[in-house]
Picture 1 (cartoon, rainbow, N blue to C red):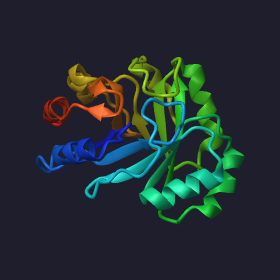
Picture 2: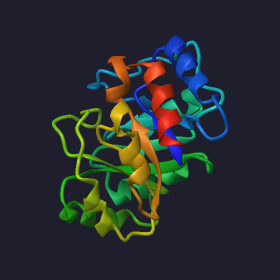
Picture 3: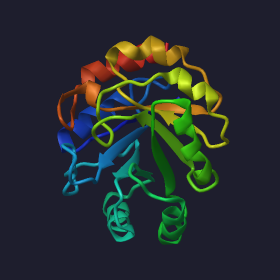
Length: 212
């Protein structure tokens, strides 16, 4: 199971959280996310003094220009770009030639009912991974859950990450969730002491419980 911690920004906190990824082979943080949406309280305006060396780097964008994405890919040596806005399939088609061949695309969708899953179909074969988040007032980082049983109706071929208000008390819920296309989870606001500052002790405890 891939564990992604999103909304990172401060160098020392990045280093501290990265240490969680080296607890043992069965308990690790695999990806870290950096948010490049200026309206976010976790917005990264400059390259931190330290970037993770043992985790894949994910850049989160909301209806950004291809030029802005390319600049961030270069500056942060991103492994993935996560599109969390209204980016169309044609936008992805236009973006791909500008991206390094090894940079993968994650497309996020806000889910409340089974009807919302229909929006994924035009992106099959374009995005490498989907991310299913809660429908909320903000673009991600709402700390609100959605009914995961809705995803029983997902029959697409694209693997997905599970997001939406996953917190320290949800380890058992995560362990019990089963879908053959679910490859991991995305953690953010419910592990924070302040926006963009993750509580490493909460993360460690959660990781030990979720990967029992």
